[in-house]
Image 1 (cartoon, rainbow, N blue to C red):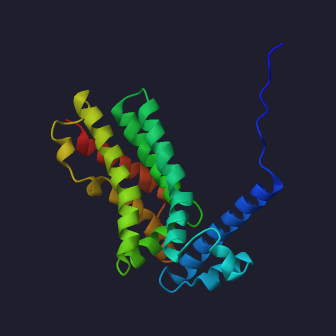
Image 2 (cartoon, rainbow, N blue to C red):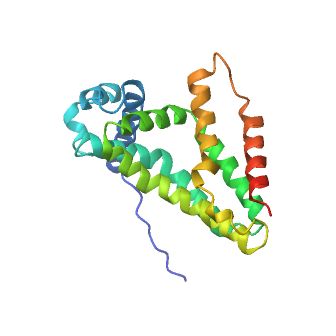
Length: 210
């Protein structure tokens, strides 16, 4: 008889702790979006989560640490999935770049994501720690992925030899602008993001080809 291994299941206490931690993160995201990082107090987060302020300190030692966890929970899974796809994709560099940008648009327009990005951009000017964390954990990995895709296209003859010299900001900024535009100006001049995305991708691929 083959011996079986009993894998311990998470107990009720652990499940409750994780649920409370998630509730704090969700409440913090709502508070940061509504009030901005600097104006938000942990009392505000506690009130939204329906807990006492002291409970937050059982999970997070500061507002800055809580903000970092908000970013981790909302953006790291997207970043990690993109990095995995970079490794597993077996098609052309052009098709990978197309897929990469489509996923960027999908992620950027998830519920609350444009508001979160707008908050990071505005608050980062006044709170350098936000900028540093976001740059190191999201911007740098995103630029590395983009450069990897472009280099793959150069090596395969799909992209022009000097494509790697293009500023990555030129290639990616339309995705951010599109999301922020609709958040800010939807009532005045809404963007059809599907057509906008297709135009952006076609423009980038045209610019990269020999």
